[in-house]
Image: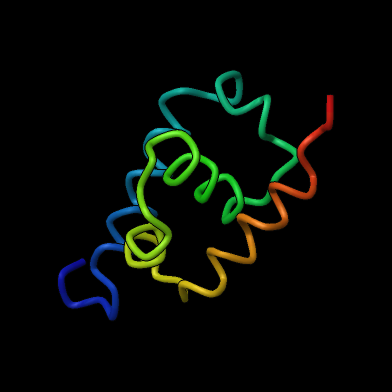
Length: 80
């Protein structure tokens, strides 16, 4: 894991897989329609409050991709 190009991203994927395996599908049902990268952004930024740059570092993605996912989540949010 430490020899990976992005150890933080590797650790995040391992943690995500383990949590999903232990929790089963029920806790993720409200966001099951989202892709895994969008679920990650939703959890890390919108729920845990991590800045987009930290989300990018943890998930091994570019900050621009995190910002794009945040915009798509905001656009898809039901109005009401």
